Image 1 (cartoon, rainbow, N blue to C red):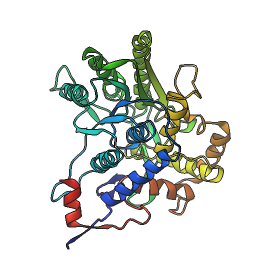
Image 2 (image 1 turned 135 degrees about the horizontal axis):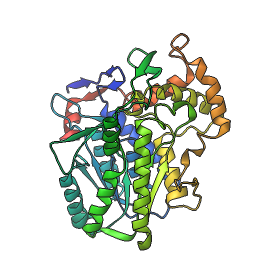
Image 3 (image 1 turned 45 degrees about the horizontal axis):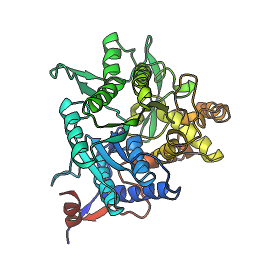
Length: 399
C-alpha cells in the first residue's frame, strides 16, 4: 500500500503543510478535555461563525460535548485535492463532524465566506431545514484579513496590524529559523483604521443577528457572544492602542447595541475578553509571540496555563451558562483575569527583558511551549502520531 510522507513546512511564521492524523488526535484530546468536566445545561442549537480553528473550534467542542448541542459551523477553508492536503481548518471540520455524529449529535459544516449575504441565506436555510427552525446561541469568532463591502461587492476592506500615531519597533519571533528579529511598523493611516474596523469590528456581527431575527430563526432567550482582547501593558502599543484595539472597541459598541435590542426579549449579547493564546493569526503580531513566551514560562512555573479549549470550556460553564460571571465596569466578561492578574504580570514583565535576539535560544522554556502549540495547530508534534499515512486513507478521509 502506497504511503505519503507528511513533511512539516514552516515559511517565516506561516505553516505550509498539515498532518491530518495529528489533527484527528488533537480533536480527540480536546473532546476528552470537555467530557471529563461533565455535561451542563446550555444551548441546544448553536451556530458557530469561525468554527474551524482556535476559539471558534473550542466553542463548538464545548457546545456539543459539554451541552449536547446540535451545531452548525461556518468556516472558510481550502479543501484537499489530489496534489494538496488541504488546510488544518478543513480537517478540523471533518473530524469534528465525524466525532459529533458518532456521539449522536447533529453537526453540519458550511465552507463559505462568512461576510457574504449569500452565506447568511444558506445558514438560515439550513437552520429551517435541519435545526428545528430556531437557534439559541451564536458565537462570532472571526479573524479575517479582508471583507467585501456587502453593499458594493467590488470594494474590499483589508485589515492591518499597525500602531497609531507613531512607528513601533519590537521583536518578532521567526519560527522558521528559530530566532528573534527586530521589526518596525509605520503607523496606520485613517483609511487603514477604518478598513480594519470594517473587517474586525462588530459590523458583520450585527448584520448576522439582524438577518437571523428577520428570518424568524431566533428563540426569545437567544444568546450571542463575540470574542475580544485587552492584553497586558507590554503589548498595548501594537494591540490595545493600535488598529486591532480600535476594531475591538468598535465590536464592543456593536455588542452594546445588540444587548439593547435583545434584552427586552430575554436574550443577551455578550462580549468576552479572552486570554492570549497561540494561533495562526497571533503569531504574526509583532511583540506578541515574545510576550507569550514570557507568559507561558511564568505559567509553567505557577500552573494555570490554558489553551483555547480549556479557556472556552471554563468561559461557557462558569460565565455564559453558569453562575460565576466575572464582569468588568464595561459589562464585558473577563475570563482573562487570571492572565492579567498582578501576580502573573509582574513576573512576566521581569522575564521579558531576558528575551532578546542576543540571548534567545530555542531551549527557552516558554518558547518550547509556544512552538509545540503552533506545530499542533497543523497536526505536527502530536505525541504518538507518525508523519506518514496511507494514500488510500487520505483519499477515504477527504473525498
